[in-house]
Image (cartoon, rainbow, N blue to C red):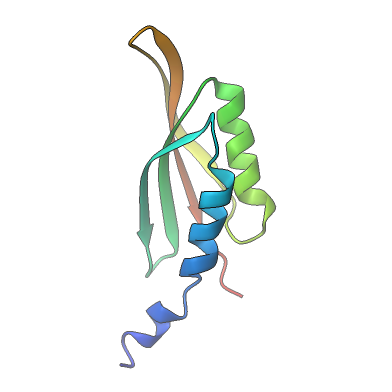
Amino acid sequence: MQRIAPVLRQPWLPTLRLIENATEPPIYLLGLSIEPNTGTVQMEGEAPDFKSALLYVQAIDEEGLLGPAQIRSHEQVNEAGRSAVRFKIATRWIVR
C-alpha cells in the first residue's frame, strides 16, 4: 500500500480531462503515454497545419496542470488526398 499510495495521489483525472477538453477537431489525438513515476506525459497528434499544432500545445499549457509542453517532432503527411501535420508533444504534470 505504501508503494502504491503516491501513484494514486497523482493528478490522473485532471490530466485526462485537460487533454480531452483541449483535443477537439481539427486536432486529433493519436497516442498518449503517461509515466506516473516521473510525471512525463507524451502525446502524438494530428493537425491540419503547424499553426494548429502550436495552438494545441498552448492550450495544454494554459491550465497550469501540465507544462511546459513542447513539440518534440513534427512531419507533414499526405494521405488519401489530404495534407496534415503529425506531431509529438512532451510535457509533465505539475503536482501541487
